[in-house]
Length: 586
Image 1 (cartoon, rainbow, N blue to C red):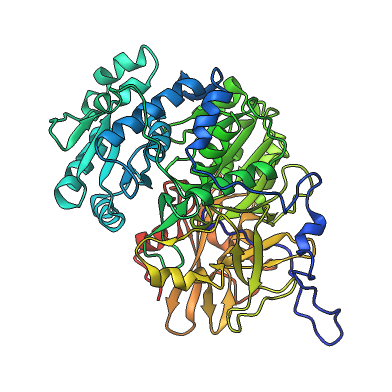
Image 2: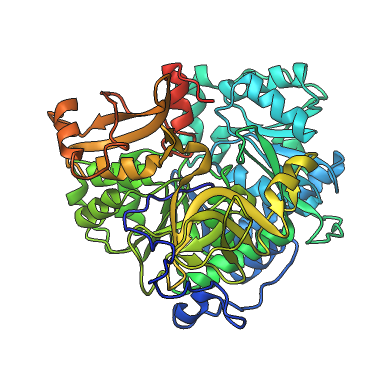
């Protein structure tokens, strides 16, 4: 969900004038504004537990022992089976020195190993450091050294092992645990994979720095239980660009992650323990998937249909075969589904709740998805890596406001702060979104100054601009750093993007500011037309004429046949697009 921003398509309340009603405060001395309009049956003041996170897996392995927990490419594991493997991994990790303070990196695509080692590291007492398998060598070495990762876990794919060989040579990394990818596959795929994908499988020279998975699990599963202080001990170091773009490790404690899991499950009260199935297409190394797809699912006994990567045809097969009830994804996935030529062939009535996060959900994408799938279950949430990540959601049952990212989840306070004065702004006024709650990170690892820059007076300053309406629903305007200043006027890219998305022939778009000697910055738009569309720059300019102001009108529209660049989690990447174009913003 991290750093999701949502365009404001409704006109916000303007600051009060001399003839306007008095501004409505967010807190009246007894209640926050949203408490009065909270969904029926959910209490904002609901108690939240603070426990070691591995207790989630321990309890699920007992409660749902015989229920299928994970289906990976046709091979299934029960909660009981996964619990046994977690114990053996934890015991094996302790034998090679993993305990409190030891960082273990997960350099994995979505596989059952991602789940087993995530909880195994935590149960051994260590700290998980999530890594994107698409990292290049330079990024990998930088994060290893910054996080002080001692041990890395990966699979025996050549692409990944080559990077690990580089990391062992050029970073502080001490050991690599290598898991056999084929062993996670069902028969006969497990036998055929090493033959059919011979070139993709690494040839490993085993030594004291390269440890085989079989050696880690060669034990009786007896774990020396670590003594965990949930509020102080860091469960996960999750890297993020934060508000400056410089990667930093957000220290998410056991209490942060446990509380956020409970906040989300209390919010989505329609979840029936032991009866749900979730689509696990988001990468588990991303904070959105880590909490929503993994932790929440394990706690609720939800079956995870785990995909190694996003493939539209495979997602449709999952809908048809497994009839999932829950589907968390990023807008680009919902957009791809809605625009698929064969979307009408599938029955989506099984879906109880689709959660969009990780990036803004354009209103036109929501409308088109619901129109094509006949599902009214798509709602947007908001959060950041620094908030574990969930901060607000539209209700699973109740009023969902178009253009809003919902209400604060239980125990969470969202305030709008004036950046100039630091004052808390009343309902309807735009300012910086600030968040307080038990899910807010401990800080950035080894970066006290960066921590102090974003956590002030107990509030996390998000770098997002937004406002709260009279019912406590949050509307986001844009990221402060993405703001375009044209001749002194503020232009929010998301507002321009929303207007462009209204055109029926637009599939994807990114708007950004480009340096301009006369205007300071000027507005450019990059657009991928829908398949078969005959869209021109002139036609799109004319379409926008009455939808945005002259100062917001793009000076240049670039039409592209190929998809716009996306991050590993699938959200459109303004940063990568500008890098491709060789454009540097000050």
